Image (cartoon, rainbow, N blue to C red; front, side, top):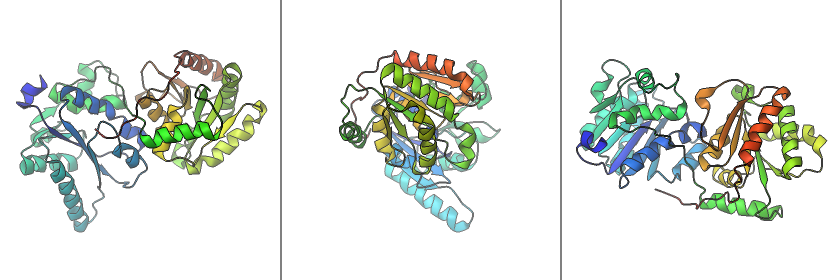
Length: 369
């Protein structure tokens, strides 16, 4: 179906993205990458990411993603003519390294990526795919998908679209559907080394079950998403007493304070082992720490999406119904739980996930596509 639309199977696919540089935002696209790899196994995938936040921590993680052959980042802030020249120079250099025969613009709005796609069609003779959100935007592409609301209505999907579904709007122009694909992440050698060292450092055997917790939400704009600390303490304490779990706290350097606040509150459960890794891991090492866990509890944060992508049983704890951010895989539960009164529902969800009995948490780690 897709090959008929393109006449010939692509060999080098360049994907254009221009949104937030957050870990979760980027990982959400991996289900679409898998869809492309399933359709054309011999093709290589290349991501050209346009951002206002170059140098974000997520770049290290995505650069080693197993589905991508290359990942280039271009600063899209263009206030002056010099900025535009720099932007075009960097975008051209990245595209020339790939020499794409198919360019997919995943962005539903804006002129920057659509114009870039049209330019690459001229420069490399590439077929171009995009989204005809506004009248006339489809003229930039050889194949254009319908606007996202029409895409959702045709598939009886809720609106606004769940984030992972959004990249499949553009892919629908190629006849590709999500078909239940989950987001993906694999443990690299750096993650595996950290996971093994973590157990050795704390004298934990491979069979010792670990409970991961990412409180997160350490930036001012995200504090309202942070779960209730007393609720977390009661949930973690109950699970530790029931299962003999060692708690592994994760977090960025600026989240050390909230972890310390949690641990002070959690002192009521003294005697239960705790490992605090806040500020002690790179994102690649964090993959290994999460991958070691039998269950991962988290706020709506990057590590939550990392756990989901790794296939680690994950319980996402939300302060309000934010369903576009949810995942619906069998190893995931998303619960709205703003107060300690919500403990029973969280305990039930955690028990369901622990019943999956994840004994070998480490898939074979490979780097590159």
